[in-house]
Image (cartoon, rainbow, N blue to C red; front, side):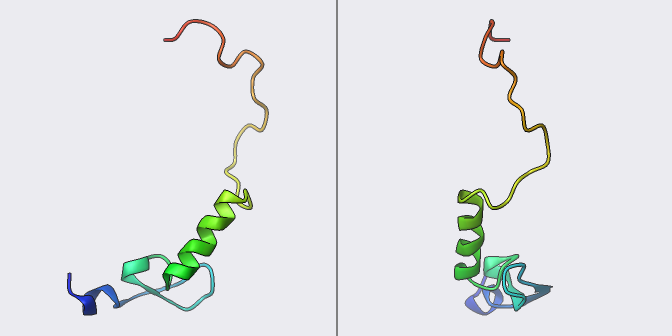
Length: 64
């Protein structure tokens, strides 16, 4: 892939700032926006749906 191809816009918008997304950083427009998003995951600002309780017996018993 050439440098020109890496900078081509994807036609979608950056989920962080709304600017046109760049192929190299897809789905983001820049490394900065990608890093901001990663920081949000590290700071637990995003969550995945699912059970919030951890079973009491987790880690007990024989391995399967």
